[in-house]
Amino acid sequence: MAGATIRPLAAGDQAGWLPLWRGYQRFYETEIAPEVTERSWARLLDPAEPMHGLAAEADGRLVGIVHYLFHRSTWTTGDYCYLQDLFVDPAARGIGAGRALIEAVYAAADAAGASRVYWLTAEGNPARALYDKVGRYSGFVQYRRF
Image (cartoon, rainbow, N blue to C red; front, top):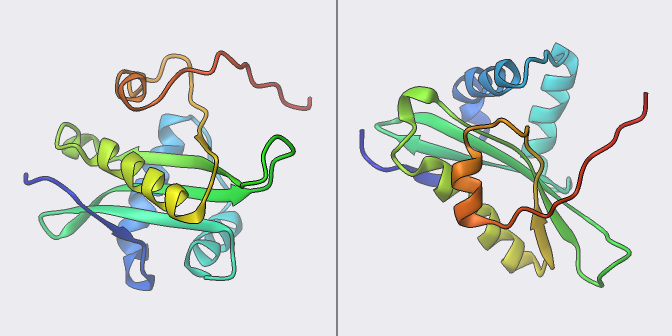
């Protein structure tokens, strides 16, 4: 399998995006309601939304996805960029798609003048080996409402 090409998600990508989105959910042992998935897909394609999506394509098919969004911060004048979801098909891992997707988010954040790009992941996620090469562990711990 050749290296991946990174590009924005397009309306015709939904059939290729959905299995990757479901794979992401399986990895995190969660199930997102179909109506939420449909709304998220619509938001990813809506230029008025602060939510964006990119696809990694190799050999004519989608092999990876990343979703990111911009939001304000009380700590800077520039927005922050939250890399919310990143998933690469297990059969396509090792071709550099994950790194390329992260770097494409970095480029989008730079173009938008964002002062920070950040993301969350599970402690035991094997992708942390990549994350340690492209980012710095912040040491923060996430809490959620009961």
